[in-house]
Length: 353
Image (tube, rainbow, N blue to C red):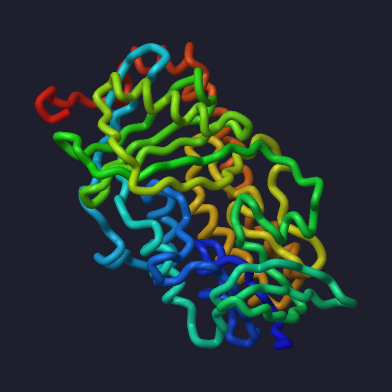
């Protein structure tokens, strides 16, 4: 069994940035199930990098390579309210990218002092003052020992479950499907439909393909997804046979206790800690910020937990404040008033819609 100072579970934006930013004085291992193989795990995601995510990358001094980008680049969102039948266009500066290639690009920045394993964690234990992590790599079971453990393993975090089995936060089932894009023009849409979800859905054109997905109630997610597809057919959406279907859990924090950063020598970052926007479900920026904050806390060699939780406090406040924005997006009456007013909307000629 190999031993390390720190084992990071998950190398999405949170884990990759932590591993990239941690001092070389620590021996670090990172376990992630993504690879360049065709059958690799891929995070279900629309793949639009929002301004907050762009800012977080720029603060790291990172520039997106062309290989991560896809066509078209999108400058407006067609917002569809299925409750009222109203449609509005709003200017948005998203970067359209391939989420899997984005994650792999971030992982490529991890330096050689971090040992990378491509595998799936099956068990976490604590023996004396060390953590024992069991995982499967190439169909073989392996074990690592670490003084510290970092959970960067997303909404369904196994590290969080190990630390706090009673953790509760609003959960949704995110479902998305990929299709051949048969629409006359590529577009991005944000869809509200209180009959099927109190969250939102998205549709985006991407390199000749078309993604439709949304966040739905856990118990009835599949049925709500299919009902909504039928409604959107009447709005001119063209689906056809899906190329693939993806699903994952997504969190939606409401209160301070929905953020959980771990205990003792175990830490949580990104969505594993509940750090995701309750209004837009954007989580890349929070993942980057929290991964960097925890690495810097380790690098100070002071009280790691105190340094980390103090530095992350402004992000917590920002995410909690976004709950005040939610009624204007998700309560049909207030959303109808906002869309009717036309505030911040732009006019798009009919032939270009």
